[in-house]
Amino acid sequence: MELMPAGKARIRIAAEAFWSNFFSGTDGSTGVYYTDVYWQREGTFWKIVRNMPYKAGDPRQLGADARWGEIAAAHVRLQAALGSENLDVLRDLVSENFGNDWDIHSTFSDLIETAQARFNACDVKIATYAIESTEFNGQDLATVHCSAQVRVIRIVPGVDVDSGPISAVITWRRENGTWKLFRNLPYRFSHPTNIR
Image (cartoon, rainbow, N blue to C red; front, side, top):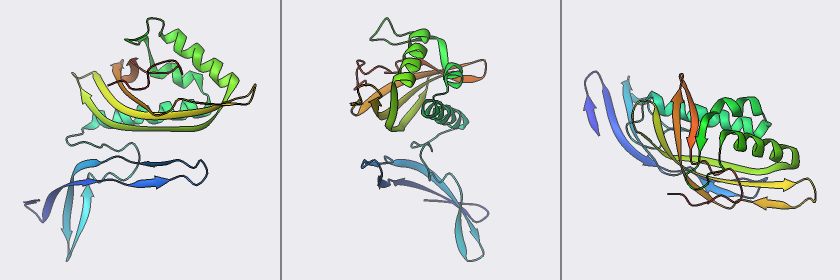
């Protein structure tokens, strides 16, 4: 804890929340959030005024700046586009220079075509996603450590396909002011699921 002038204090915390989804039957956690929470004294009470992570997508690491929020917002748009099967938004979030280190066939076109085929043939049952940490390698390049799991039901013949737990290190690049997926997104069920 650091006491600051004008009745303020900064306290470094670590917190984690656990949850259980009644409908899908899945359990999970937010992961551990590390943050410097700012408090201010108002009368005889201390109140939180800044940096309190309280929802999925909030920074889980110290020193997060505005770029962290931009990446988190891009992830939210990506999740919404996948959930609503919106290919236009998906196209906007993927770099035309997209590729994967482990698969030379992974391209912008292949990712979009795979998404379209999956939207036509499957319905999503479960899609979980969490950002573990974000590291910036320059002003316009970010490495995002994340975890996910996807379970879909193939409309014909009506069977579930589950990715199992996925751990990935995805590279995002800011292009013309917009953060876009640039490298190493496992988007096929045949892609590696433990990429560190």
